[in-house]
Amino acid sequence: MAARTPRGGAHAAWRRGRLYGGELPDNLRRLGREPRHIEAVAITHLHTGHLGWAWTPAPGTDTPPFAHATHFVAAPEWERRDLAAEGGATAERLAAFASRVHPAADGEEIFPGVRARFAAGHTVGHTTYVISAGDRRLIAFGDALHSPVQVTRPEWSCGIDHDPAESAEHRRRLVEELSRPGTVGYGGHFADVVFGRAERRPDGRFAWVPIA
Image (cartoon, rainbow, N blue to C red; front, side, top):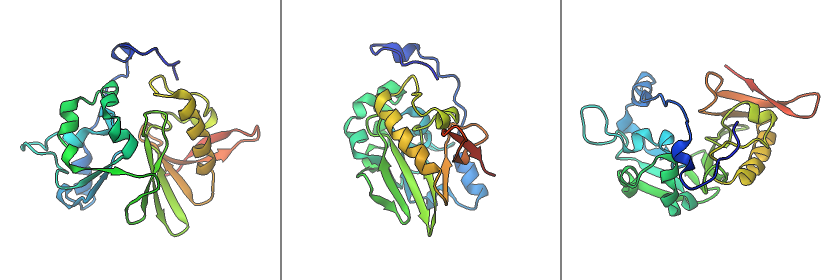
């Protein structure tokens, strides 16, 4: 993880590398779900790498594939959407789905069994989503964690975190939670180990343990 760079144009010089994606609609179809059947879209934060199909037209059309669905964004994140440009989300891109946004409250059940939970730091309104079923749950933690190494070193913040100290504090609590029975984490940035849980090591720190 890199040290945070100063503000004032620094994000333009920050090299994030290539973004690969675009297969979500096809993957849904492989699971037997057409994009038109999706009722809700849960957005962790307003960085362009997490918004793709919210504003991008479906191939061969001029409309995003989830244009009919409610888009949930944390209320503080949406209120400060002027900051989204730091993560590549231009006003034009946000406008493409603005009419469908529902500003979510902390703890709000946005869909049966799915609750939004604020975890600010990476952005002002970064949100995790907790999906529960009985005594089991999955925490989709977005960019609260960017790398498995942060499970062991939650004090290490990402170089583009809006507030590194706040993100580290949320991360400490999140890692502890990921170690609880019946809890699985999902991290989109965790390469080929996106599902897993935290286990305590003999030295008292935690480690990310992938699950199939």
